[in-house]
Amino acid sequence: MPYLMNPTYQRPTPIRICDKSEKDFLMAVEEFHGSLTPGLVLGGVMVDLGIELIESCSDLGAVVESACYLPDAVQLFTPCTVGNGQLTIRDWGKMAICLFDRKRHAGYRIWLDLRKTREVSSIYNWSMRLVPKRKRTADPVIQDILTAGRSVLSWRAVPITQQIPDTPAHVPIAVCPKCDEAYPETQGDICISCQGGSYYGITG
Amino acid sequence: MPYLMNPTYQRPTPIRICDKSEKDFLMAVEEFHGSLTPGLVLGGVMVDLGIELIESCSDLGAVVESACYLPDAVQLFTPCTVGNGQLTIRDWGKMAICLFDRKRHAGYRIWLDLRKTREVSSIYNWSMRLVPKRKRTADPVIQDILTAGRSVLSWRAVPITQQIPDTPAHVPIAVCPKCDEAYPETQGDICISCQGGSYYGITG
Image (cartoon, rainbow over the protein chains, first blue to last red):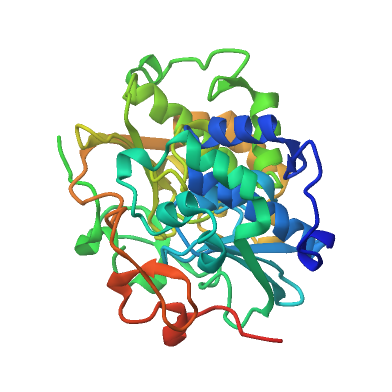
């Protein structure tokens, strides 16, 4: 990991992120996410570093510490998705990810290091939300993130100390007597939705 | 919607799902998710129906009522992803999705209708988890789901009655005095992670 060990290390040219050219990386991100945002691009840079740190891992898991942007970067460039259970989201609003070995319960946490962003005011201002929302997706910050690369990140080897994902994947199934749908019987005599927790109304 | 109105409607041949041939659909699913599972294929069939029901919608939102499989089907075949805020996950363990217009707060909920699966015992047994886990990803159920298509689904037009996503996207940011990372100040004087809620340990 020459870049991490040696502060004078020069980034390779042309820049590659997540095994793609910068252009292909940005295109892939925009196609999946629907737009290009600074958080998504920074997420890609984080994933790129994480993959290098963890090297070969046959049972990769990931945690993202924000529900915005970061999940998409991980889903695009690692085998971990929300739907396959390998990506866990902690909705903490922090610019940090963790890639870890699910067998060894150990991996690397990577975060945006505020002290390092003070050198790049546009990234600092973006991360502290000091820029009005409408300007936050402006190209200049994205370019500054691409130029800064890993220089604004820090990382640490960490053990995973909680069960991830949080809940057991398989629980007994019952049929809800109210809506006739299958649901995990741990929810109670009727499903959560019929208990009044639903997000939708019944019409017609 | 001839298929829904007319029970004798014959599915078009060759079958197309989410604007792809069956083969391309299965390949796309497997590439993103890492494996082919019945839930993922059924999710694709649900999304296919949902897109047809909602027709043109410039501001699409989605809710999935299971954290397994369904999020990936939605992310693959709609513009809604977890990271762009257009996909909301309700971890209720139900085989149901909702595609809705975020401006009109109205859309369609689609669910696996248990009564309809009784005709296809393999799908019923799979959905009630009556098949041991190791057999649940077997090809026969996937093929049965592809053959059954929409015939095992029901749907309903619904208003969206809760705020989705649940939390406001933008809150004031502070710097945690303990870890020096940026976090939403609504979490308290220090970030959730430093309050003891972390999933990782500090080593080295």
